[in-house]
Image (cartoon, rainbow, N blue to C red; front, top):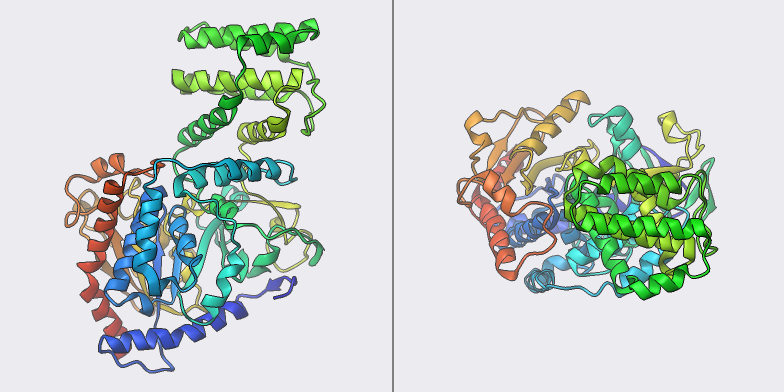
Length: 562
């Protein structure tokens, strides 16, 4: 594939080839379960795997595993996933023709995810290198530190490595979901331009019809021309883009702060080291550090005076520039320490004492970094990460549509960078990515693993989106009593639209207890589960498929009979 941009509503040549060659596999699968298939009318079946952190990854594993056991996986043409589900997808697709060895691959993944620890030394080295890049953002930190910790793997493969097995029809075609942050912020969830996808062949806006070769995603373009080729993004980073909505804002901040502290801890300053670093420093620097040490003592005592101490430190910091020559951050008005401290001051009342202690610990070391030259090898990483935290900068990517002049919304062409994020902020179940008329999907199997917003939020949001954009979709009507106690399977049908199966993960058939209890016990914020818990979650998702496999086969037969 070339570096040229593609402006079209049609599927890419690579996707077309993959779908065409998949038909033989689908036909053979359906024939093996007693169905006659017209080679010219092979039904397109899509699986949707919702987000939901590690719970969703485990649920996705169980779902796909049981589809294989029920001789249905080879009938699937598309798999699209959101957030945590993409962790399972990438690790499956890294194995090539993963559908043929699914038993061993799934067991290996379960054992890996159950490990209590992960050595992220190599991941930290990758992160330090990434901090030198122009487009560094919290997504890098999230990908190389948080995601690797959860999935126990630093995935340095490339999405383009998945092409061969897709193009020969061996595996369903994967579509990984993302969202354009600025489009979402300005135009809302129902705007088609909010949706972005990554596939083995292209990255782009499927409903705007603007795409770039996946190999060139994050390379510099201007006026439809490649200006500078950048290395292809690795799957670890892309997983960071796809899965940055594991929890609410406060929880995400807490996770990042905790991990920054862990990075600093092996290098934390002793009293003697602090004294040695201050020796010979100007008086104003010494005064700043003394104020920081006083603040640390006060916050460790859980004293309400700590807010006053922080504000005194900020007053002194205002207008003082850092002196360390090792920093690569551009300072416009004030130091990183002052910006971080000001941000902490605004959020002070929203955090518990453990959070405050961690933040002050980081601020103290940041002051030593900026004003004494301490911790030079981590200085740039820590400063840039904390600035991104303060300004909430995620998914910074070179804009391949910059000044393109193409027939796309003009706001997509004005800036040199775009900001991509977890599609879960739009809809945790990425229905739109398999609802393009060119894909001609006849049957959708949608699995909802995160039910914080209710067991039907994904499909209801999809119905609202389709209504707003004139996309054929069945009417979604739910018995009010099912909102708190859903069945294990729902089937929605309509005229000239796909048949949709909806599977709530927690339900009255496979899960004992209430949805609230299950959400609290297995929420998206979990970063590790024991082998026993993984097996429990995996078994639930497998039962959901097993108990309803005949219903799925009956509807496939119905489609074939038309």
